[in-house]
Image (cartoon, rainbow, N blue to C red):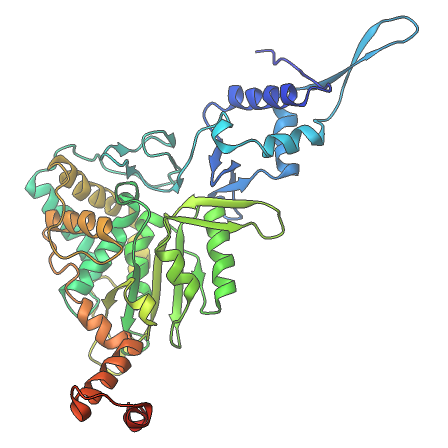
Amino acid sequence: MDIEPIYVSGDLPKATLAAWNAIADANDPPVVFRYGGAAVRLGTDDNDRPTFDVLFVDRMKHEVARIAPWMQKAVNRRTGEVSERPVPPPEVVIRDMIATPAAKMPIPLVAGISEIPSFSENGVLCDKPGYNAENRMYYAPPPGIVLPPIPTAPTEDEVRKARDLLLEPLLDFDFAGDADLAHAIALGMLPYVREIIGPLAPLHLFDAPIHGSGKTLAARVVLTPPMGTIPFVTQSGDEEYRKRICSQNLTGKTIFFLDNVTRELVSSVLANKITSPYLTDRILGKSMEVSVPNRMIWVCTGNNVILSGELARRTVRCRIDPNTDQPWLRTGFRIPNLDEWIVVNRGRLVAAALTIVQAWVADRMPMWQGQPLGSFERWSRVMGGILDRAGIGGFLGNLEELYDAADIENAIWRDLVSKWRKAHGEEKVGVKDLYPIALEV
C-alpha cells in the first residue's frame, strides 16, 4: 500500500495531525501506546524482554520518519515550476506531537506488560498474545512456555489439583503459620488479577529469624511463574527508592523487590507510594512528568525486620521459621533443585493460578467477608475471596503478630503509656514526672 507523504508547511497543527494519523494507520497490531500521559513504543531490554520506551524527541523522530515520507514543496521563482524534495520530520512538529494531550493521541491506552495471561476488571481472561483491549495489558509470552487449557468453569477436582500444584514448591519452607503461607500464595496470585483489584496492594514482607532460612527463595518461587526474571533493589535511601520506582514504572516492569534488609526500614517515599493510586514522577534528565496507575508489586525480605509505624500498617507478613540455628545445612528437600523445577513447570503453575481465579470468576467473584486491611480494602476482598475458593485459610490472620514484632515505634509508645498509667493513673503529671519513665522504655 502506498503511503501518502506528509508535506512540511507553515501549518503546524495540520502537520502534527497528519503525523499522528500516520502513526495510527500503521499501528496495527499496536506497538505504540499511551502510558502515564506520554507516548511510548514497545521495545526490548538487554535480555530481549519487552519494555516500554518513552518517545522523547529523538525516538519520536525515529518513528515518524519511518512511518511516512516527509516532503517539502518549492516553487521556482523564474519558471513557476513546483518541485518536491524529501526532508526529515521538522523538530517543531515532533515537539508538538509530544506536547499533544494524552487523551487526543490516536493510540491505545496500555496498563503494562505481562508475561502471563491476566484478567480484566470484570473477570474476562485476556490470553491473546499482544495488546488486549479488555484489560489494556500487552501480553508477551516468553519463548518455550506452553500453557495447558484453562477451563471456563473448573470443577472441584480441577481446583483441588491446581491448589496442590501451587502449594507443592512451598512445602519445603517452614512458614510460621497459615496466614504467612496464605500471604505468600496471595503474592503469587496478584499479577493475574491486578486489574480486578485496582491500584493498591500492600507490601509483602518475607521475614525470618536467621539468615539461610529461604525467605528470598520463597518469594521467588511464587513470583517467578507470573513475573519471570525479578530485578532486586538493595536497601538505600528515599531518593534512590524514588528513582528506582520511577524507572521501573516507565519500562512497564511493575515490581519493587527490596532484598535483604539489614537495618530498620524507614521510608516516607515507600509509605507514600504504596498507598498512592497513581505513581507520579519527573523523568530523570527530562522536563517531562509521567503519572501511571499504581500497579506496583511491593516485596521486602530480611531477618527480624523492624518497620516504621507507617510501613507496618501497609504490610502483610510471610514469615519463615526453620527452628534451627543453621538452616542452610538442611537436607532431604522434596524438590532438591527448586529453581530448575519452577522453570520446567512454569506453564503448569501459571495454568494452576489461572484455573483458581477462573473458578472464583465462574462463582460470580464472591468477595471475602473478613476484616480487611486498612487502605487495601479492595485487595483484601478480592484476594481473600480467591483464596477461600481455593480452600486456603488463614488470610490476614497474623496482623497483630506483625505489629507486635515489627512495629517497634508504636510498641515503644504503648509501653510508655502503659508504664505512665501504672505509675500515675488518671492524675495530671508534668514532663519531670514522665522523664524517668521514658528513660526506662
